[in-house]
Image 1 (cartoon, helix red, strand yellow):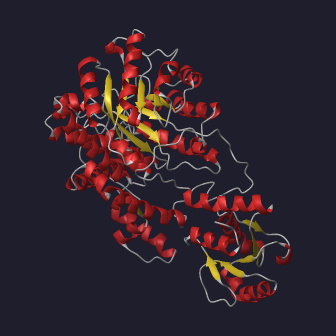
Image 2 (spheres, rainbow, N blue to C red):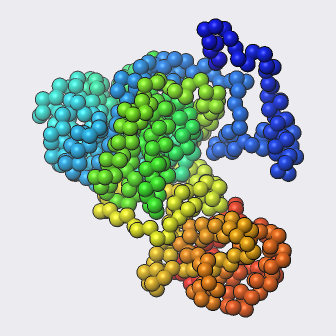
Length: 603
């Protein structure tokens, strides 16, 4: 909206308004110079980007891109926030995760910015019997505690409640979540969770502990299995509805049942998609509340965790950038609590430095960037509002699919949900393999000489249910093969890059080829002659014009010098003695796997 100055002078008042069609004609003119002869809407479509779930992001959004009224913060449909004041009072809840019985680390976090604790308890975390020691020195009436205990949910919850009583914490002062999540546990382990214990704890919290919630709707298992944003939303809705049914059947009113649930979502480095997902999640849960006859109870409590899927093991320092963007998106999206996973999360137990950086990420965004001072800062953006609406519809459709399958439990047990997630991950894996979705430090700009970051082993994570995928997994397997070869032979597999013509002609493709092969752990050699390189394969690097004059002859000389395979960096052509081609958009994982196989690198 344009705000006129006090004197009423509108600087652009004498200029005619531009139209969408004029902009499209300008776009078409630019595209025509690139050889893409399109007009009108086709020109705009040429600049659009395809997302998962059948969504497309256009290059321009205007007032014509309407979306339903998001309402006001704190009021249904809660798109703009679950509370009218948002996080303006003091920022979001900074929630740190702990998986071991390290009381000193817990206190260090709380003394330096963390405001609540997320404790993994049981076989895959700290023992139930150690809760008292871990929470020694913690003011339990000030620091909310959230449990994640799997099979040990009921004993862990009972132990925490016992500690509240033992330390004189009034029941109305207790805050947090007991973490019962039977369907999430089944998704992780393949074993049915204990609904009876969950409903028992929910009744207890509803009757005696008004500040405690009993159940968590954890969408991370579906995100970590490769699910899209809409699938994550749909699965969380189906889980939440299943819990509502169980709680109301156990005697709770609809309103009290809603008050027992907290939702957990992933935040990725795709900041706009994350913002839209959190806003859409609140809108969808408000729709469930409306359909349940309790529209005022539909304010969704959101705990957002930076995505484990996006974390990398190689060049893990880049994870700090990823988690910073994800945290920003979580804050802008209106998350109530945010957990920033330490940058070394996938390498083992995070050290003190990694935990400090993780908690300080939120602190800087809240205290220095003042990100929480504005409620729903993305609200009103035509792009964000439209993306929120489209994602809400896609998530609702996936929720309906799960309901048609018989609900969340039935969809899990039949394998239908797992297959849907696997199909989505297969499509994304293809983009990762072709580097259409680049991963900095892994598929793009890898550094073979980096020193590995070593951490103490972390507790084993639950397994037996849905798989856990990572963006770096295909390239990590290639790099692991190269590392094993280095350990066994004293050198990495090598490829010789033959630069043809002047630097202006070969630099771009030489850099491309070096980057590509290093992503698979193959060391590029650019100096000297082929015979002295220690390589068994070579890649020609230059411009198309130079290739026409020299490619065939140089390929023949390389073959005569002992090259078993000669590749060319560029689009496929008809050059004699060239065996294969590498180019932007080729299947890098397939190319690198085949190269390592030919070089005799063990799998």
